[in-house]
Image (spheres, rainbow, N blue to C red):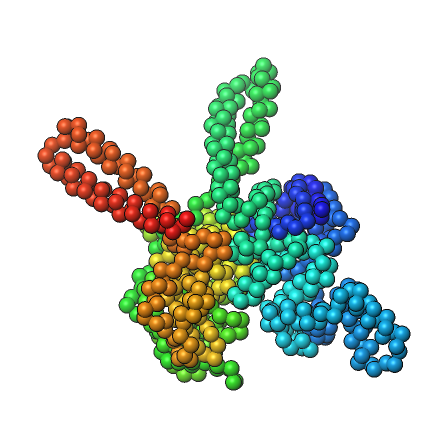
Amino acid sequence: MHYAAIDNISKSFGIRTLFKNITFNVEEGDKIALVARNGTGKSTLLRIISELDTTDTGSVWVHKEVKVIMLQQETAFDEEKSIWDNILRLDNPVIKTVKEYEIFLEEEKQDDDHLTDLIARLDEYNAWNFESDLKQILGKLNLHHLNEPVRNLSGGQRKRVALAQALVEADLHEGKCLLILDEPTNHLDVSMIEWLEDYLSAKKLTLLLVTHDRYFLDTVCNEILEIDDGKVFVYRGNYDYFLEQKSLRQEVQASELQKDKNIFRKELEWMRKQPKARTTKSKSRQDAFEDVKDRVSLKKEDAEVSLQVKMTRLGGKVLEMKKINKSYGDKVLIKGFDYAFKKGERIGIVGKNGIGKSTFLKIALLQEKPDSGKVNHGDTVVFGNFNQEGLQYKEDKRAIDYVKDFAEFFPLADGSKLSASLFMEKFGFNAEQQYTPLSKLSGGEKRRLHLLSVLFLNPNFLILDEPTNDLDLQTLRTLEEFLFDFPGCILIVSHDRYFMDRLVDHLFAFEGEGVIRDFPGNYSQYREALAKGLLTDDRQLIKEIPTQTKEEIKSAPIANKSNQQLSFKEKREFEIIEKELPALQNEKATLEEKMNSGEMDFELLQKAADRMGELIAAIDEKEMRWLELSEKSN
């Protein structure tokens, strides 16, 4: 069944074009992920399809039998009413009947005819399990105090109430709906995200969503729709397939761009040579020149994201947390935590919402005092703190000026410097966005600007509290590449499992009642160890894995949602080896040719023989490692 048709639509705000003349269809059963840079109109497009916004041109058609249900990033509630009442205010006959039945029972009316009518309608709607199903969804989203007024809820709790509303309404329409979710995993802890993954995967529904969680995207979606340069590209497959096909498309575009540049240079030279007064120029050639000029000016080349950071060297003492205890009333967050951070450590922090992760970071930064214990910072430590408070500014200035207030240049390891403007380009801020006032940036752009301003200070110890929230996938890849090569310490709180699997060496797992487990591996390995029962269940401060299973856990393959058996570090190693092996083999062949030519003197021949031995050993080692990784990936 044809659910929706988006035909040739465009949208601009002032001089800024979000997208232009884009067309795509939504069919019954499609589960589509919308991918684009922050600020390029993802949320606006979702709102247009939901009839909450209008297009400049084109049209949106939705089948008359299909209900469009949208989870927005901000949802309006009746602040004085409870969670339960806000959900029951949905305009749906099932909910209205259930509510009417509850009121009838509460008022204890003696009206047999009305009661019979209500029971008949509840039977017709098959609504007797509605309340239990709804409470199950609310329970999975950790919403238990259903009589609590919405005005008392935190931002994260409000988001979860809105998500519950959308899921309930979609379920009531029995699949005859288009469910639109804008960043549904924000403010959910990992267990909630995994439950939502399973829930959406199992349901027969049609889905259009924006998410930065790549495991979630891979598990739930069967199609990726990308907006790039104001155009739309459709990929039928998972995230890895999307990356592969996008890379091929960019290679073709780069080749076409180079051809156009060559033609442009030749034609520009021809145009300059012609006398202005001469009227015998080929009109068609002049028109062709203008076409090439337009193509060259419109096409862009993606900036390289590799940054070799020059930072202050860390001394022997980095960060020490000794016998830390912290409670709020009867709630114990940290109990006797003791740890000395070492150079180059990459530690991830995981645990449910409200369990003390952000408090832990504040204590580490001396922004909050523990109830007892000591925190010592090394003399050479320069912290970079990315927190959830977001971009803080008193004066509405241009984005480039905000960054320049920190520094004009970013120092690189080779002694050179990168200007603030070029650094911003690497994190997706083009010239137009750099000169946009802070107040005009989208929510995702503000998060991205906050992040790059932290990195621009060139810290040697990064503390990142949910850095992936509201970032687009391209910026996430940029951030991952930056952090992958970052030589300092990293402490990350994140619910993004893909992000954590790729970057961290081990975990601090917050397990409640002040217990923090120091686990030697990444998130997927931790989940696997839990599932296999490899972790001890004593309630000590840091619960150790039994000695005989540590190596087993360290070497266990990541439980990748896309069935990939290699860890992300192993995948990167595999890719590097595939590039290095041909180079080594070419060098070996060239060296053999020179040695066999008879033109080398004894001294050069001896050096060549030594180098040949090194090459053979390196090739053998890399070929063996390549075979290991190749077998593991099959």
